[in-house]
Amino acid sequence: MVDQQIIPGERVERLRRAAGLSRERLAGLAGLSATTVKFIENGRRSLTLRAAQQLAPHLGVRDLGDLFGPQVSISLDGRPSHPAVDDVRRALTAWQVTITGEPESTDYLRGAIDAAWQTWHTSRHQRTEAGQLLPGLLEATQRATRLHRGADRRVSLALLAQAYHLAQAYLAWHGDRELCWLAVDHGMTAALDADDLLAVGQSIWYAAHLLRATGRGDDAVERLGEARALIEPHVADGGVEWAEMLADLHLCTALTKARMGDQGAWSDWDTARQVVERALPSGFVGLRTRVSRPLVDVYAVMCAVDLGDPDEARRRAHTLDPASIPSTERRGRHYVELARSADLEGAREATLHLLTRAEATSPETVRYSPAAQDMLGRLAREAPASVRAEAMDLAQRIGVVN
Image (cartoon, rainbow, N blue to C red; front, side, top):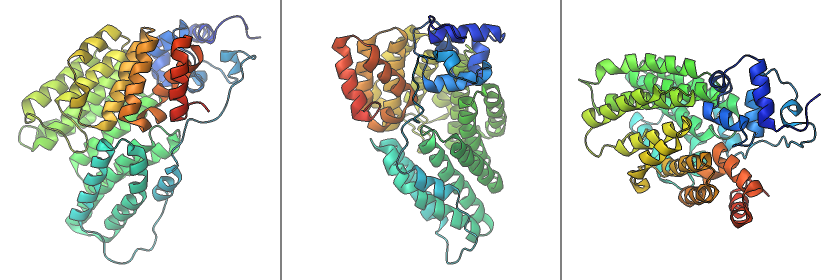
């Protein structure tokens, strides 16, 4: 019988201890940060349905009432899904058995994919615009890989991998994890068939994000190490794209370690900083990755937040002008990270202010971000009256509550 007097966080802690798990181990298994588990247990953060679903299998819980208590009513509605998901799903699962006609040229396809990535990084409504572009982009690149031969086919395969990566970026916050895995698998297969080391490295980068999100942080770090071993020998004599890829792999490793509560994240972050400063031209911005000096600083804030150090996050953010972040989508996510830092300190007014800034920058980033949804939901329910009305207005505006 569940004790109805204790809060859900206390139930999580009791079950974790009974299972013989440290917070860090449970967090890694569940795909959460150690700080998130800590704050759930001590009541500084609400136990959301999403977090409960991630934690339950590793705590031996089959009935979520064992976490929330039988008196709690739980809605099983999924997180908001974008209206174009079904169209993207059809494009990802289409098998074009018979293909005729002439393929698009590799130059045309490269231009189309570059334009799609530029849209992703510059539009305030990047998911809506990407959702409109992706079905046609996937179909055109899939056709090209079937109809081209020789070197053009290998180039087409590398471009197809990029189209799948954009699909994964689009799908990441919409709850259909199997569809994300399909995009990762298709992207990796295309990159390997292209025999293109840069395409393989980037495919591993994307796979690592999904491995981390599903509680396989150790696997993600291992795969990222393999990718760096592929890329690093070419940095000295190759073009800037090799250094860009190496820096991005180190940044992904740093964030993965931070979400596992590993202070070694700062070593990888510093290596990425050195690569950007020494091997990339001043003012360089990666077209698809957005690797740049400001992006390195963005990652520093993210690592500090995930390591549970709001003072360090605030210090790192102090000299970073959000206007310098070369991506609207990334800028919106940066404001969400700053809101997470304020949330860690219990600064509700600051949290709401930063979420409002995020929504003004990129409404869809806030609408579909699980972290933003969690913070706004709690503010709308629990904040003082002076904040709650404004939080409710923002939550209604982006569809978190009706």
